[in-house]
Length: 494
Image 1 (cartoon, rainbow, N blue to C red):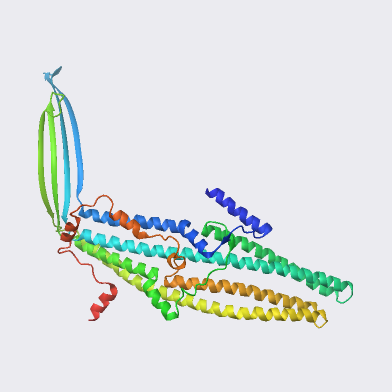
Image 2 (cartoon, helix red, strand yellow; image 1 turned 90 degrees about the vertical axis):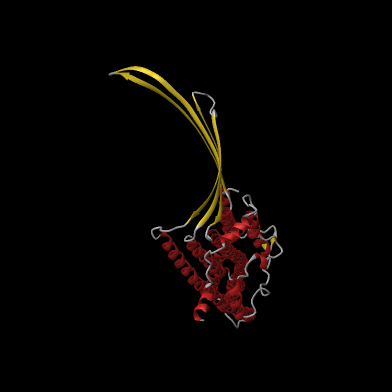
């Protein structure tokens, strides 16, 4: 579907919702269905997966440093010259000419034998970058699922709010009709009728607002999930996935929070790049073989009249002696970037702890509010029925009935909001501890496995049998990747 058609469809949906209220659903849909559809089609997730597949190629590119480089070059040169000798100051014409051609071709194979550990460190950095990308994908997935859950419970909340608003209008309309009838027989005054009319007008205004909010929530749902909401089933409980205590939540976030893990892998990548920068001070060794052929011809159409062949092999050793400070500057730069990444780990840990604490307390507050609102609705319903019966025997005024009706509807709205907030808070707790993912929420569906792409590109064209041998040689006298920040601190203390 084109962008213009989709935009037109969403606009039509919103307009229809504003004019006629929520459309009658034609199919049932569960939260698992919504998550499954978003998991497969959400553009943000698809974009992040494509970025991760592109990142997988960095390991292949790094491993190419162990593999031979083969090139073929060829050239053909044709030359034509004329010679003339002047007689004094007069040019009498050309006395001779030369026609010649030459052809050459060469096949060159260059095999790195030792890079001082540069390739090994580059591979380690690329692998850590891929792990960082996988954790970033988990973060995006958690964010998308949070949006799906919020959109789902928003629509269900707004459907209930519109139902309450509709019931409120119906009840107030009946009360207005009853008030008019009682006014006609002189039981109440014109003031009572005016009060009923005012409450009905306010209820109709709230009804219109509820209808508009439902249309907005339906549009948000379609944008996140990929289709318009149908008859949404009650959301399933998340209690089985929630940690048993706040201490368990903190411990789970320490080992499973994707933001914290991404920061840790980013630090590993920058540590490997420090070793890569230091490896530039080591010598490099390469082997080159060349098979060449050349031919030349004079005053002949055969370019291979004089034909030569050559085969050569060269072992090259290069040792950097002076680079104007470039290598030392690169090493310092890599070390400072690693220091920054090490500090980012602590920042990510504090952020994860803050998110857990905030989500957990929001959930506790929402759960307590839910219990209180359930009791409030029960009491308000009993009070409303009592006031209405007392009004029928003249013990209560019309205003008392209207106030009791308003308190009941307010309590019912507070209850559906409390249910919405409690469920969303549960999802935020799961997101903070790293468990708001499809593999936990909807494990029965087919999950995206980023390792499939990694294995595919690692076995792509270019691998050579002696690559492990070259890799083993490259580790000799190569700079070692330093310890993790926590290990370095422990070593310094000892």
